[in-house]
Image (cartoon, rainbow, N blue to C red; front, side, top):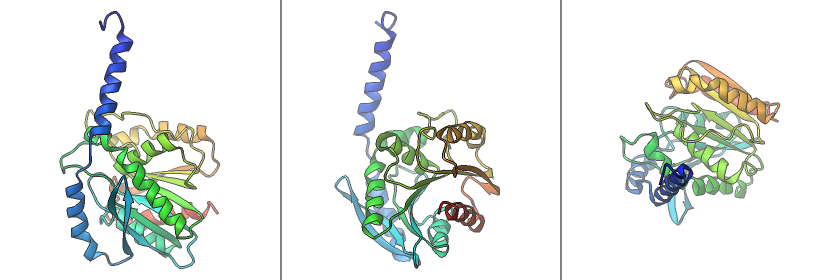
Length: 260
């Protein structure tokens, strides 16, 4: 049958993948454990329980005095909204620069899960992103920026592919395109048709795939044509921006400042 109609085989494979994707679920028990571990240790900001797809999930809201805008923060694979590398420095440091932050618990799987394991649960992030944006709008923030790191960026891009980018005012991607060995990206990012300004920020000591695909991402961003979009390399930083919290916050905040 495949020899006579190879297109049919591809269609069947796509249908099987799509069905499996919508049947897959995050590890909600692990999310609950993560929440229990961190909720009483939050020093800056307040825990907020938001709802998506009929389930509550943890977020951390940190409000700036005379807030200039608000930033939704999506952490990387398997972590939580107060993760010490990348997330905590941003969600606290951006507030000091005048930007309120809302850090969301993203869908997680078991600790050893890889990029291809996560693809079938990307759609579970959609409702959480929308709940975060709504929370910030309801709290009076007129400008909302979506900032996503690593696997969180894959989830953000999946949401933008499905829902467009009209409900956000800018996008910051950190470590865009990180996957696992012999697991190339499932779909290209929609950077070439996004309407909002984009900051593509990655470390000098990034994963090889992030660096290798950087010229392609730059071409896509330039094709989209927003004059304030930029690709930037953070010197000495690795994929997790370990011990680079201050320069990371400065790079993001400086770019946000010039959007006004």
